[in-house]
Length: 382
Ligand SMILES: O=C(O)[C@H](O)[C@@H](O)[C@@H](O)C(=O)NO
Ligand SMILES: [Mg+2]
Image: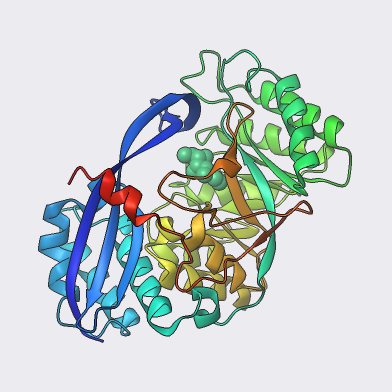
């Protein structure tokens, strides 16, 4: 049970996802990017794995913090190890981020699952083995036939409904798109989607993240007329009082926070202050599966739903182990990309979706990621 090694393997993978200057994803030509696989090993040879970006597990972070906390410890003590890593953050000169806590925590959960031969949601205490997904559309763009017009969004929404999605979330246009942000264009895209899919498909928006209160209010009021289920991150989440004001002035539920720092502690403050109607968590956003579950259970104590940010196995297990969230966020999706093609370093999808829109939690142990270790070794760069 004792942890004896923490290893990072860097490898190249090919993707068609490109990030714009604001960090939002868009389709582009295939290109190689570097990915990291963190592995935690025990004295009896068991291993836990979790993928992340290379900078999240760069040598300084692994040697100065992660190894110091984990090596020599009982891998089953996830709560104590998470707390110790979190306490190192304050004095780390902002070098030890929530993303590093998340990848270490996920690898420990994967290690526990692989050791016991159980998927993580069963270790947490499963609520379900399948969950409805909403299709999370990429931010808008200026690509002809992509997501450049409201009509493009409408056409793409129709294909998503044919694929089986029962819910769709639009990320609308944001800079560096030349004319964005534009509330009226956002509402035109939302109206085109509602027109295309009809009244029974659930719709949500994840808007430009820095609108003013009055812009966000105009957007929210327009969405209420279109029967949208929630408005997400329309303003800077560092202003909790702006969200309290918006939630007080809108009928459509306000969802958040997604990107605000502070883990489950700060999300408790959003609940206490009435800054959201539906809480939000995400394994990468709050520092792991361990704090994501705490956030979910805290929301339940206040009769609130808590929607989970992001795809991948780590978030799917949190959703599958919780009653008070409706969806798994499957994406990001775009007309030019085939999400179901997966990744070259996985032998199969971690979030397969059937034709009725249900994502089935893989019954494989741990995170359940079907890792192609041969591919990783053959494409090692560090
Ligand atoms: O802001 C982003 O980078 C994207 O919107 C991304 O986080 C997306 O996954 C999201 O916000 N989902 O809710
Ligand atoms: Mg979001």
